[in-house]
Image 1: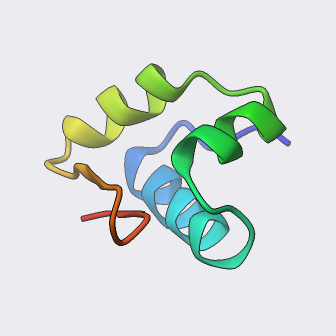
Image 2: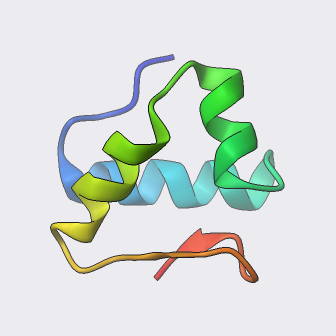
Length: 58
């Protein structure tokens, strides 16, 4: 599965997948073959940071 390019859609998809299927952003990226730094940077551009404790972007 390819993640969306739109940052708000990316936020929604990633947070949903983290909530429902993955214990960490690292696990999600490994399973989907995605680049963690790319996701983190895109979401940082819209003022969201990954919260490891809550396992979601906030």
